[in-house]
Image (cartoon, rainbow, N blue to C red; front, side, top):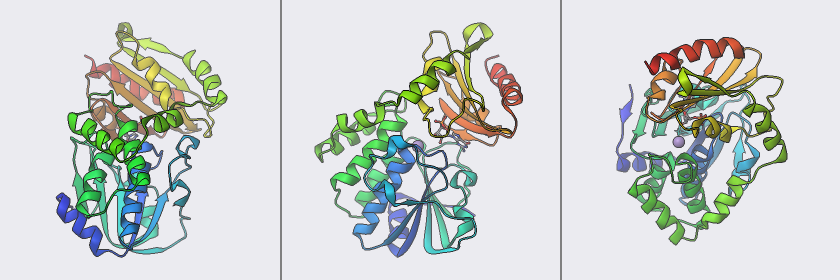
Length: 317
Ligand code: 5GP
Ligand code: MN
């Protein structure tokens, strides 16, 4: 059974716990990392013992976030006791990696903003209207009665920045902008975040050149997709921004990025103008938002493309 909490109940649950494990989701992004880092700082300021966990490599682009070196990856054979396990910005249990097996906690709290949330935890705080989980974390830190410091503010701002595509996607509300404004008043420098987030490695641009050559159009240009075959895939190269290229071509309604990360495993990212790609991703046990979603297909690249593109084409019929 999953108990739905309001903000005050969530703050109460966190205050009751002394030892907490905060988990960012696999394929980590700025929202899950910034949210976890900000909440960890707030809880530590209340004297709590906090472990930060992510069951994945951390992309270099997030190295500038204050406290990022605190993240630990658990070994599957470990057993970590805790009062509360907190899973942040993940809509399904698989996104938590091995934390739900490794951590022996009295309860599991999930803080999320994905409408595809599967209600897998004991307690859930879900705000599907929030642009980012970081927007929830901003209110939560206040509900905990903690005074923001610059590091907390920077990490929350990072979450907002990432999930709104630097404050330009349709999920950006006046509340999101108002929150960002308050964070700037606390000392956050927007150019510090954007300079760190926009900078590219040469290897990234070189790979982008090769990936753009794979661009293929379907349905009279209403669908565009690019691919990263295993030979090209390098987990050290950040490819998160690549999907924006097919996405912003005039006439494209759905953009897809296929990334073959293992011989039999292909990661898929969807972006759309109007169609509900969360629904498509959910059909493949993934999830996300109406206009940005993802899933993993346990198949090689060509096979994954065949299966997924059939559904994408049908979505435009
Ligand atoms: P991205 O394409 O940037 O990896 O993800 C876009 C959105 O979909 C994000 O909100 C992300 O959390 C969600 N998402 C991506 N992949 C998965 C997945 O495999 N499972 C679930 N539940 N959500 C995903
Ligand atoms: Mn998010």
